[in-house]
Length: 64
Image (tube, rainbow, N blue to C red; front, side, top):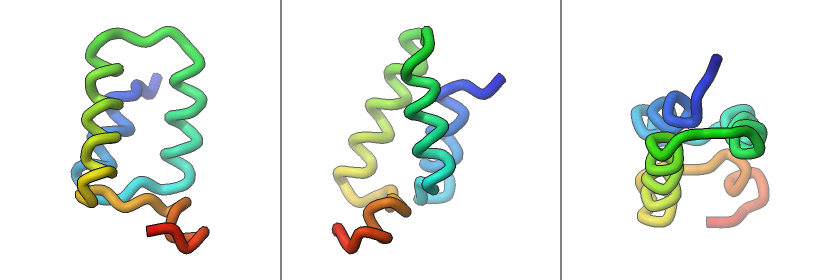
């Protein structure tokens, strides 16, 4: 079973959050998760705000 931290690690490693990964995160966030997953998600949010991870969804909308 995929965990939030697994999806986050992939995005942090590649520097890119795909639409598929973003949708998977949305799905996973509606289920029970532990503090490690929450911390990983917050780390991903910070990386995205700092421009370290690009989001496919934002690129498609023209948002930078």
